[in-house]
Length: 305
Image (cartoon, rainbow, N blue to C red; front, side, top):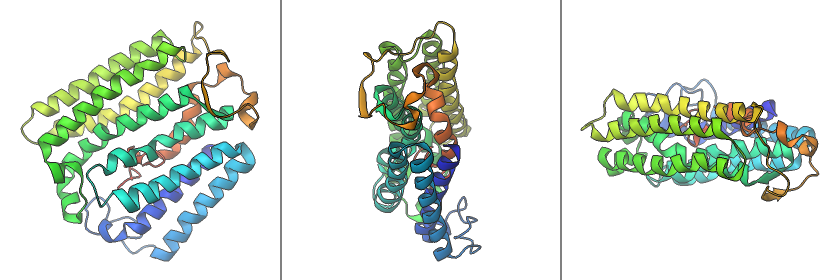
């Protein structure tokens, strides 16, 4: 599963670099990428990306289960066609809608371990989806001159710094209640609840500090770096919570199965053994970041933009 996740994320980013080779040369942070710098030809880069994606799909299909294979492929296709090709150069909402690509890894990991997608997996998807805008816009505030030079309509370029900071606060306020919801339907317990509240309070504090600043200051960098730590610690808290003696796995009657069933290779895995963090870890690691679309499957161009 780890190898398949790395291959699929690598394939998505290689194809992204092939498509964006024209604008990558205009940005300081991307001009040294292999295709943009001329170290790899565009044709070779595209062939490499497609090959990695095909190999990953085959590996998931043959060694894990078909559901995880289709979800991993869907993440690649969404990142390449919806985010990179369609949204990135057309709208300031690119990172919002395209952020779904970075949220696919939890679905892939959950399907790989259980052979299905249920409500808990959807919550993990939603957490990364709503985390992406404040995370990536913090970086976009700092790199807005780069994006303007490349003609990419990131939020700070199109709407300005004040509007971007306001939007970051709005998405953070939507994210924080979402992170505690798994405790209310039995997927996670009190340890995770406390961790989610404390980690979220710190993220909100950075948002408020950033809004009070009249210009882009080191606070934006601090928030960007903390947002990476925030997500890692949040998922780690899920794993720790499920490993504690008083942790309780959701019963079959409590699970809301959305996709798949109990016939995949992972179906025999005990529900107690499938922690949210464990189910997510392989795919999330493979994602690495632009943790927005670029931030997760590819966690999105962090392998990013």
